[in-house]
Length: 72
Image 1 (tube, helix red, strand yellow):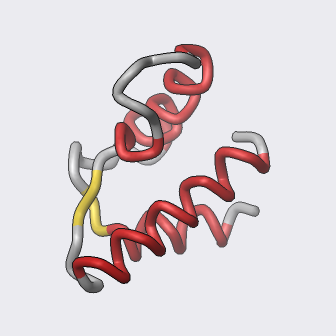
Image 2: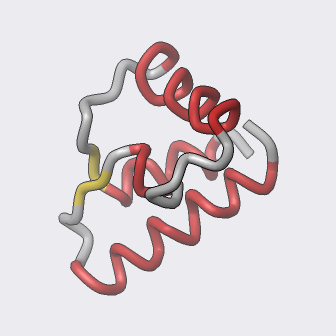
């Protein structure tokens, strides 16, 4: 994944954690607008989420943030 989406993932995770606490879960759709304006990037993140790491539909934001930080 490119640096821009990694930074967005971290920012969204930080925002969700700040609002709802460390137990908050999210799906990979949380990093995109309701309007799918970048299907290639959406599929890249979906592949990372589903195929590479075999994550559940919803995962804890703290887990996702740490995974992205570990792979920066």
